[in-house]
Amino acid sequence: MAILLTGGAGYIGSHTAVAFLDAGVDVVLADNFDNASPKVLDRIEAITGKKPKCVRADMCDKQAVEKIFAENEITGVVHFAGYKAVGESCRKPLKYYRNNLDSALTVLEVMKKHGCTRFVFSSSATVYGDQPAPLTESTHTGDCSNPYGWTKYMIEQILKTACDADPDLSVVLLRYFNPIGAHPSGMIGDNPNGIPNNLMPYVTQVAVGKLPRLNIFGDDYDTPDGTGVRDYIHVCDLADGHLAAIRYAENHVGCEVFNLGTGVGYSVLDIVKTFSRVNNLDLPYAIAPRRPGDLATVYADPKKAETVLGWTAKRTLDDMCRDSWNWPKQNPNGYEE
Image (cartoon, rainbow, N blue to C red; front, top):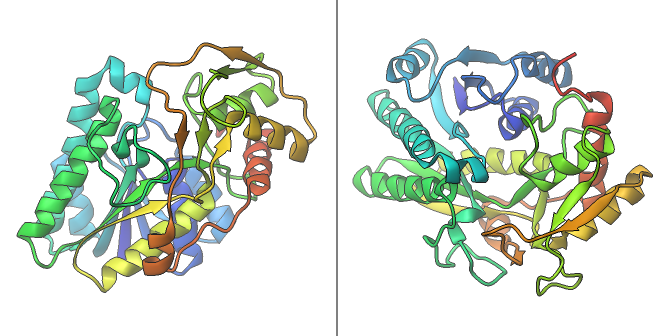
């Protein structure tokens, strides 16, 4: 018996695989390796002492998904598979709607055929749009500012109505805030293609010398230091949240939603200063114009996850910044030698 991690070789999927294996939960990873490296499998084995089974497959390919379920006793699914770059989603919206919705629908259809009823969905705080913080699970959703966010919102609606129609189905929607960090071993981490879209990979590429400086987009927001404030969460805490979610799904039916964040907002300059301090590095940066669609302040109210799932983020901002640097310091070219 195993949990299927779709997109399981990616940044969050690989850390979740480690958390599951360390907890004695068997996993099958499925990934098309569009945005991941097969070399992550050896790293997972080195960390956990167990090499997970991995299938190269696209989750939009129903025949491939059928084969995974036919050849393995899958008791639950954690669905990470999907495109995730906000900027690219604005340039190529149809690509995002087709892939992200199609992959989720295909997996759900095959699950139903095989009597698998537990589904944990990798959602996002982007579904909240521009709402005042702190954001609770009952905060209004559906004012998304980009196609990526809309795909998350639409899949949430699909899952809610699927639960309404199937009394045996158990769905947990996990709305992530801003995952950063890496496994403390430095053996797995975020490995973006090209110039990163997110703050911490951008910071680490400046620190490793691949980029000349960090551009901070806007210093005139209504925040304590003028730069954008976000809720950053260590990826290992996030991985533990998926373990808590799949265990919750074992004993409950219906659809539940949980924020996964720390409940603390840190500014871009907080990140820069903390990263520089804990890693004893000078980090060059320049102030650039605001980017369209960026919000001033976004952070979670994570109390529901603590109360219902028994989960809380444990790692500090110092931990996040230290582990974020440990990964590229050991692997300046990511998974490539």
